[in-house]
Image (cartoon, rainbow, N blue to C red; front, top):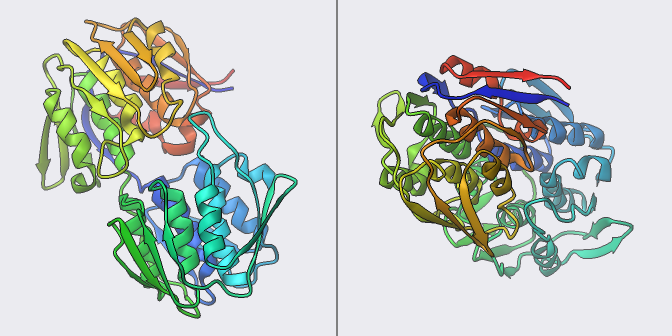
Length: 418
């Protein structure tokens, strides 16, 4: 199993280009199943493991997929299966996003139940309740969700929590439903708006994306189109954190600061120099950071996917800070690994108290999930000595060419087997 070796203490310098957002590309690939004719061309797709898994799933269903660079062409005209099997769903929860499109277009879907995951339970009750409100008949058996409907019908749906994947699944299903669907307390993440832009290009009639109330007027057919995936705001924040803890100076290109405003505000408050330039976002830090409190929340709040990376910054900041995790109940597993590197962190329930230390020491550590692994990379870049990060397959799920990008910024980082 591969490990990442990082020799810390090198200020990052230079430029890094941000890939397309994994969390926007995955629902976009699922949405391609709705097209009756013409291909769906997706551009700026990140080359990460989760994308490969979703492409494998679509191919298994019979879709034709062509990949070239950061572009993927999907032609789903002649699907031979409407099933998402356990072996693929267990690798990636986002496979459940095929449920809404398959049911809406074919009237049938069989998708393995994704269950919980390392960072929290994340049940799909909201997905199922919304589809049932639209007339779906759902049967759970043998670890699978089996859904049927002659044709979905428009409905008034209220989400108890603004779940991103539930909003996406129901939004896709509603595009081919008979009548008008209203999704209240919808997720407002930029990835939702990006999905809506793709669906509109395919012929869907959608209003209110990016707000708490999305309205969809169903149509009878959607067709292929071309669409460029938005930049990855979480990758942007990760490289910004890396530049900050290393006291470097990095230009982040190809990003969109407007969809990262909550993170920019907190990083600025912590003493990170952030400046918008014509070519991108300039991140600089020459002094010790300051402790800043953070509470995670659905968009436009501080993203839970940046909490771990920000904690690595606060571990080295002057003074104390408190991080409250209000989205997932088990997202402090990186704390034990940061402690191994000398961080002073105590947790109680959903809160972590961090007292900044002057330096971190390299140690063998283990990644527990995607963003926890990014946190350990950030910490390793600042630590004294060589940090060894195990189980980096988590990183490969969401970060493309991480070692290459960091090396170009001057980091001493390499991947080794075994």
